[in-house]
Image (cartoon, rainbow, N blue to C red; front, side):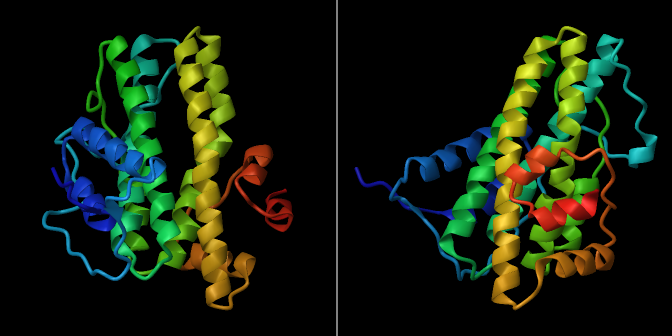
Length: 269
């Protein structure tokens, strides 16, 4: 029996359009395995121009999306509060699946390794989402049980016309904030006895360092291609697209591992 080839960018767009969160995560994990297994039937067409066939990103009817300021404070002292925080993290990971898929299908004429890198990111985000959603189920909740916000995807949409802006402001800015927040979140869950969440957050931090590193690699590659100085370019883009300001505390060790230069880290102090 012959096996059909799967074009990476078309497949990424297809899974981006999928609205069922669990089906999306499972499909992206399977697609990601084709990269890790070096499956010869996964091909990459860097030239093809694609068009979504439904509104993107595909998302389920719940969670209801609200302004971030409308979200209630989450108390670690109650089961409901802890579940709401886990749900918020699952929502971030669901959006992170979508942003990685969008980086694959949307931008043409990048090196093949760019698409492989972002498919790896998408698959790891799908794994994180699955871990968090499974843990939510053990507490009597599921993805969609609480409201969420759309800030991460809004930045994805703002940067849809420039891959340089996307690399600068999504992985290197929005996602890098997760590196800074991770140690405090880990400690909070361990202190209330949720050791499983501690294990999940350890996995997520390890992988997210790699995701931010991929953003750094391609941001710096694009700066070199366009003869731009990275630090000044980042500041110009941050102001142009009204990206969130960087606020301490910073996880300097994680940021260094993720490829931020000494000069960039010095500017954060």
